[in-house]
Image 1 (cartoon, each protein chain N blue to C red):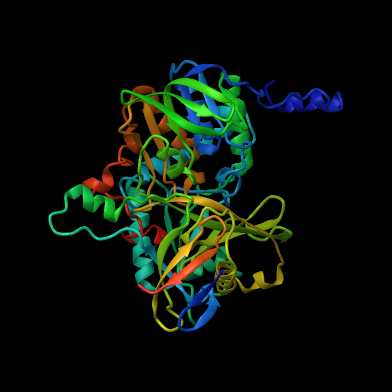
Image 2: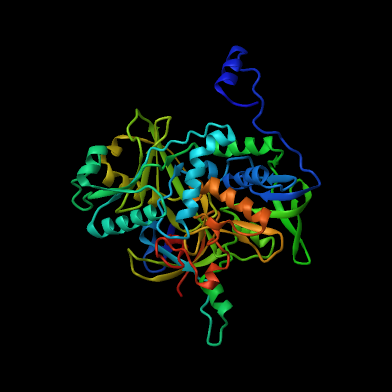
Length: 416
Length: 81
């Protein structure tokens, strides 16, 4: 069924009794041309783009739990393409363009809202670095605008401009950035892929990867063995564990990141705001909750929860930026596991095992990349060569010294 | 998480800084390029308990080696290097 105002009206007249499940509960077949491990944003987007743009044959997505229980359902929903380095900007800008057409393309309301992101700066050096980043964006055809203090104050009057320690000087703005409903992105891609014949198999944990003569032949799963011509790994958060099944060792550590939401409030913040003097970012969901977050925990973790010092640190950052936050009560906090790479940038590449492809290392920036991540990974799997905008995300860039280190933090995953 | 510093006793996590995996060791003279790539970039990253360097930055400034479960956050041992 195609979703439209007309189908909604027709269903309303029938008491909403005619809605069908958005995707089939597929049973695993004995074999597929392409098996994607991981039913998160990256895996579902990959399966959709494989089916839509490439003649990839029979495709399955294997998900350990249920769709949307991983990072695609745990992030803070921000989409943006305000990067600095040449290896990153075209890729994230492709993602941004795909976000702009996503809902029409997959016929699903993902609540994409281009409400703008404001990166606040607090001193001269930071202004210079944001001006440089804005210029790099504009050279790549991305929108960027540098606001001074008075221009910013006219748009966002409620920040703590007189903060003695971190006075606000202005902001770098990307107006096309914003938010999207994260769960709906998973559900929308799942439905669109399903309609193109992709089998989406939930509760089907992969327990082994079969390799013969240096080439992948299939996977072992909780629901039996499945033959596969090609296998794509898209399991950010558990990348090292799944890659180890194929004997691969990765430049990745797993770290926990927390996110927070306040009680529902009346409309208050109509954009995305990031604090420049600490790590804090905030937006408001359409339900009214203030959605915010900050740093990863700082030590390796496979626990999808964090500790209290980070909660305190995030809330202190929020209070320094907008003291009115102190009046709102924290409703929920949760955690997710991030693939933190050694340079802070993702990996989309072939592996030393023939017909085995890898997509991961998204650090805590995977959600905004979802459409382009799948678009480029599908290109790589189908054509066995990288898409031009993702060509820098090589697995061997660490050995080759071609790192993409936006933050300049070096090989310290907990600092990216 | 609370860490039992051998000098200061049990203290809150906010007094400590995690620095890095204590199981990787610096390659010696004659090591290959691949040895250095492994040392600088490649990590096992399993769910098994691991040894790691922590620094008591807001306390006695001691370097510690923790044996810690990365799934439950349980600390099995705190040793001095």
